[in-house]
Amino acid sequence: MNKKEGKILVVDDNAGILSSLNQLLKYDFEEIHTISNPNVIPNRIRKDQFDVILLDMNFKASENTGNEGIFWLHEILKIDPNA
Image (cartoon, rainbow, N blue to C red; front, side, top):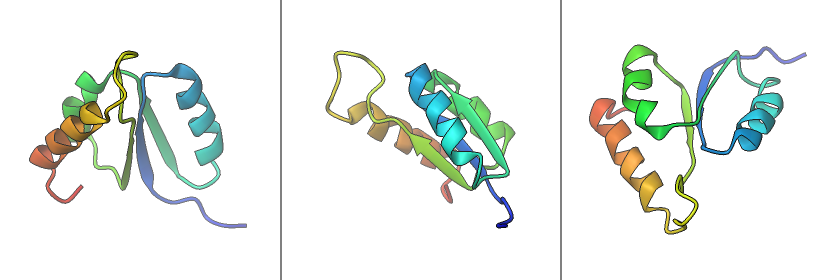
């Protein structure tokens, strides 16, 4: 049996996706943290160190350009350049 390691943060506004990823990833990661509101990202990554951040690219239903995900990626890198 493989040992679970690592801490992952999953950010998505779709509760079904968060639930599904939580179920899927629980076999591989020691800790899984999920958030549905991207505005919480800065506080969350200041509070905890994550090995992996899985980030949705679109948070508004009318958006499908991926610009929201790129924005949050830049915000994450401002706080933690090693992320």
